[in-house]
Image (cartoon, rainbow, N blue to C red):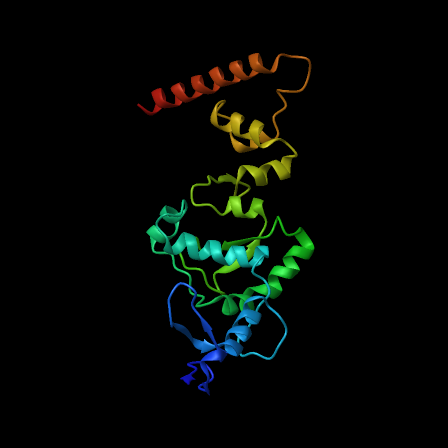
Length: 223
């Protein structure tokens, strides 16, 4: 006779599973308890105190796992930007994360689709929690990065992607005009030099040299 550690029933040895690798050695739980545990693992339907969320293979669960990995494990490729800067995950388990963020996740997926739904922190220097997190598209996620540069236009700061939406120009053209050709933001968005049959590169070179000459004159007048 042997006592089961799960159900605390005293049963005969025939009700216990035997280990094939060891002689005269039986498992501590009986075969009935083992079947119940096996059914929970296979997610069969029966009354059990174990809670199953059924979301392990979904993208929502993967997002939660990514948050934990980048905040805890030094081997993760993004640990330098999260865990190394003392950014922590304040959700204790997946159920808390689901209760706080799952309804808003479904609403955002209906509007922008699932691939465009990413978790974003409002304050990039604070932890992952309900008050500091929201669902954003990839473009909004990109504009909320720490190293993104913003330009002043009409007394507001905009990124290059925002400026491209305002002017219907490509991001590459706006960036090249501001960085390489020394245009102001307003000149980069509404420049009339590019209209006509002139060669654009020659016009840009002339404009750059005129701009540099104006700066040299200003510096000479200051001195």
